[in-house]
Amino acid sequence: MSDSRDRHVVITGASSGIGRAIAVRLAGQGARVSLLARREAALAETASLCVPGAWFCSTCDVAAPPSVHAAFAAAVQRHGPVHSLVACAGIGGPNQPGEGDRFDELVDTNLRGTYTTLRAAQRHLAPGPAPRQLVVISSILARFGVPGYTGYCASKAALLGLTKALALELASEGVTVNAICPGWVDTAMAWEGIEGMAKGMGVSRDEAFQLAMSAVPQGRMGRPEEVAALVAWLLSPEAANMTGQGLDLNGGAWMG
Image 1 (spheres, rainbow, N blue to C red):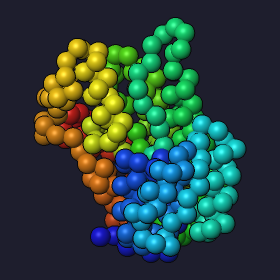
Image 2 (image 1 turned 90 degrees about the vertical axis):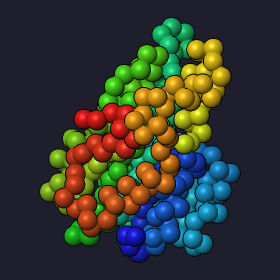
Image 3 (image 1 turned 45 degrees about the vertical axis):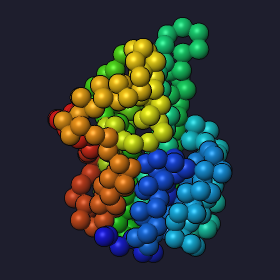
């Protein structure tokens, strides 16, 4: 297990799913974690799973820049300069053209919100030569399109371009920037997707699940803890030469 003692890690989207697993993992490794998300009660539940005294919580909507800046200022006041950021906050679901199209909502949160978060972290980074890392949670849908998911696919694909450009900007400062592209992961968001598939195809949830897993060579969903383990490695000294990359964790559903 990597040692994260005396390091301040900010995690957005920490109220559930992958973000929660990342927070618990890193706090268990000795990091001081700042947990940011929109839902205060769910954040408190994540904090209850972390090592006592290792965490700080602040409500934050990444789609609202003033909210992001206020949350980072509070986190730095509590835990000091930022050594690492894990930008996990995001929303999912389909969008359709016409009235009520969610395209802007998806892009505002997943792309613009992540960009705002990355720049806020950059502003508060601890000085070198201490290792510093920025990690973006993208998606397997950054790799290929899905009908009805234009907003989600576009926003998650754009995160890979953002990762590459920012990695070049910050390389000379010794800051690494990488993205992770999970496939199906056992989270509430994933099951909402399965249920949407079931409704759209007129089949049961179990049938929709089996159909989704038929496209995954391993035949299973990933676990949030598996994504957290990859994040922990990216924040470790062993990953010092890894930057500007999109790392795929999907049971073989997409092979680049």
